[in-house]
Image 1 (spheres, rainbow, N blue to C red):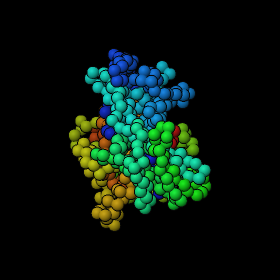
Image 2 (cartoon, helix red, strand yellow; image 1 turned 180 degrees about the horizontal axis):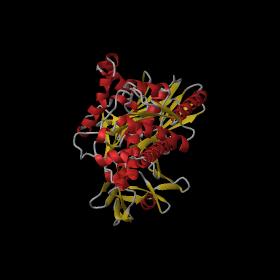
Image 3 (tube, rainbow, N blue to C red; image 1 turned 60 degrees about the vertical axis):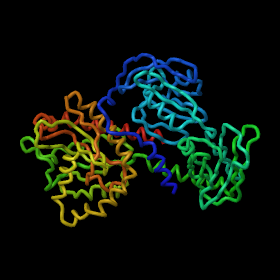
Image 4 (spheres, helix red, strand yellow; image 1 turned 45 degrees about the vertical axis):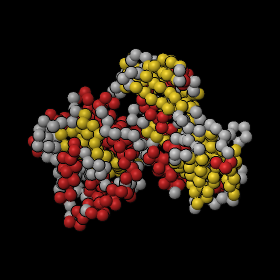
Length: 508
């Protein structure tokens, strides 16, 4: 269960990303007119710059004008906001935000400017509106950022560990009567039902677990709120009371050996955290042997382009990240079944799987590079690539072809579903890096796409497939044959992988 909890936490940080528009890759910004900040009847103004096609504001100025607490670490380029009991940490050039120790992902990265962290105003409003007791909204057209207070009387939950148990403080905006609070213990769940309670259930459910409490859930009803706490161990007693000074609801849970249990869990989670680090990267040169892959301009074979790029990539990664182990699915011109490629990755405890390919279609005008991640979702723009890459099974035996049919295929896809969000983020960092390196060559950025690609099925790690360009296009075929272009691609892939690795590991 600890393993599942850890994966759920990491997965939670990757929830919001989609296929990335070209605008997102722009690194520059321009000054915008001011944003109006309205807090109740007070009207203030914030400086703003335009980036990603959005109005971005300084977290420091926002906190100062809104009277929120904040702290900035200029060395690490981080800013922490303290808003109505919530703690939210932003890091420049990192798509991961830490809210009350819960990891979340934002689509547009915060950035560092004038010794401060800046973020898109609408991203900040969405985060705070979803996870705090405040209501926030940003009107991009009118440039108005509105802050209010939700119609709630239960705003937050704080869980603290004591020598003989766990204390849960349910922070309230009114004093409830004892007969308005009911406590129920059913199986591994402890329920607190609060009559006349009003709360943002989503915000309460984001409470960080601690001690004997392994998860928190909440649900709002017309006349009450129910808060559920999942217990990770047997408890000796439970008691609910009301703090006479603050009116907060106090739930005391007593259990033996809490300290020993917590230490054991911390050690286990620390071990899992280390195991999540990107210590092994599996590089898969597509096709090979009797499978030539795509056939392009002047009978240029895909397999003959992807292999040298893959080998160069492994060397470059090892050079820049010497502690990372490199595994290849093939190092020479040989046939390797699609299913065996991910098996090689799994057997070597891979943490990333990168499959390298070239594109080819009948329309010789088609051009550009794109990055795919595995998904059952249908993407019309990806259909041709999926069909082409999956057609490689024609070179496999009848027994091997069976592996892609029916239940086996579905189960394998489900087995790696936990990594789809990570794969999506990895694809975005790779595509962004490719755009930077191949843009000067006027190669088209075709974006991040998703598809049911057999070669990625079954990989129990984040995995992507890179289409470096169209060898059916005369110009791109000639470019892809050149060592200088291959070196650009290798540098781009290395930079994208390094970015993903840094972001994942620094946010954990």
